Image 1: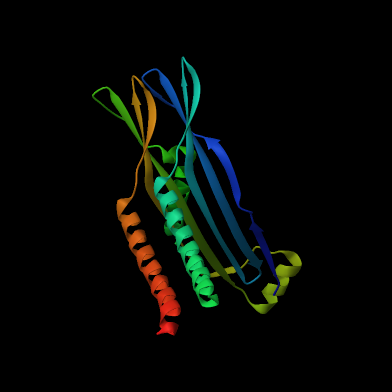
Image 2: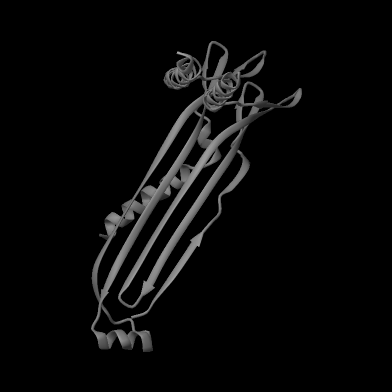
Length: 110
Length: 138
């Protein structure tokens, strides 16, 4: 019995893409989205069995809006305030114990 | 089995087709001279696996390897798959005659939970520091 494995693993691909424009009141709004994707697939071909599996994931995060009007083009950034606040909490969770450890060491030296 | 696999493949193809840049913008809603467009970050995931066992005699197996014959008696087969999608609103785009602005959407419940966890973490380390500093002197 012979078997041959075929597999493909695509690296993580991240790129900024433009979505379909939305026309509202004389303005055209074009979403700018960062798209991060990853795909993986594997197949086993043999005389007794054939198997295959695949998986993929995609993450779409809006980063800005392009506003096109008679006045020109303007880029309006979109920020995830919740994620920024959670990032600040995580940073504080690392920094505060470090500062307290330094304070304890300084207090012991005295 | 074929029907189930076709249904699974159709569902995954539908999920894959929706994983594009247009999924982050919702449908515009216009009221009182203002247009509001919800904006969300979206994540998709999918996976599937199939297997097919070919039941052949040993002699036929060798013949298949030698002659690449198509005559074989099919055996059991199976497969499965799944997928999911998550969308989280992060902002709202407001278009008025005066201009366009982006209003962030804050998940207060998530921030409250994270703030509570951070408070407990800081309280733990503060108590540890106080014990280390004043506990020895006592």
